[in-house]
Image (cartoon, rainbow, N blue to C red; front, side, top):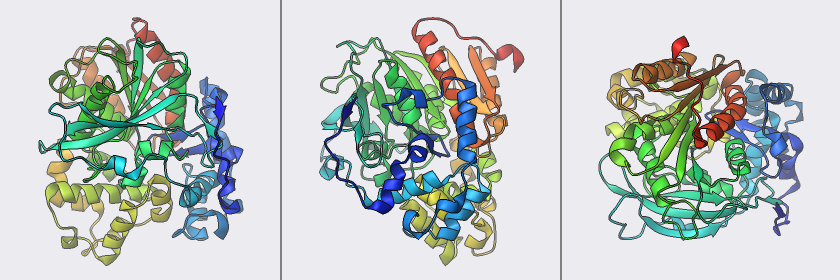
Length: 480
């Protein structure tokens, strides 16, 4: 790895974000963990190491938090409450969110994300590309040695409108001109604001999908990290829209073959992977693959903690995760063409507006334990609002109702997941088994949503290597 020339540090109040705790523990919900790409030993290599990482996070208390190291717009009391009442957020995460306020831009020119007047005729056609950076810490001291190219490509939204989307291709040192295999990562929830796009955050050292990216790059294979439609580029990002997420993943994989300097071609074996929102996007891509991108050489798929039924997921969502409900209401209202003023009071409208401009950690902290009944005009819960206004939209996002390719499949889920019910993951594995597929189902006891993710990282890499080598994984269908 090489050291960045960017050594100008942000204000002292933000340097705390570069502490060992921040680097090793930038973990959050919906598929989010960060670890320095220069230190593969921080990626858990066993379930024991994964358990220790989670225990270390949970051992932290809120005493170090003060006005100088919490994000603007979040009170010290809010931050401490989030840490003390949840296993998901630590002081390191709060400091990390605060660090984002003083960071420079991603290094990719802002006008790169502007959609040109015309787009390629085919989905997956590359519009433009630019050399980018992948920093692994928020003070930009360490730059990953992988070559990084951010590219724009054409995809199509659910309404059939051509859209520009972006993604990042990372090529580690030592990869030949013709890669045998590559990984396509669908990221967990980033937020719904353009500034939260992975391609933007990777250049700032703030992208929290670090464990999955680092682990894949350590195996000396190219990695494609997807932004999703409307995340980074113009137009709305329809949060948890299965069609747009799935198409974004597939079209990014196609476009990666056209990126100048890419070692990925039509013969390269691909694995699609993701966790939580990324798991939903991966599963959706698998369901859409045969019709949307039959030419892609997809060799395996790994989907973790998949919210296969959004209504069931929302109905069991603890109040700590109100931010995700706010993202969902904003997106569902737009997709259903419903005016939010019909059911939200001013407090609710303000909460949606605030969350829509925040990336995940800050949105979680500033909206933690917010009772959604206080946000509606008639005191209804968000679950009731969905029942009355958005069931059709939620039903369209269901996973497990379409055929997927006949390839090895990994489904992983923690029995202690507090965001996506464990039953949804097990049911998805059973559904794919009933359809005649070979499915490796890996349950675990990782505490909380993020603990379940950490516990699966070693297993995902073993599964990936075996399937790329043409070896069949263990079939779990007999026990489901």
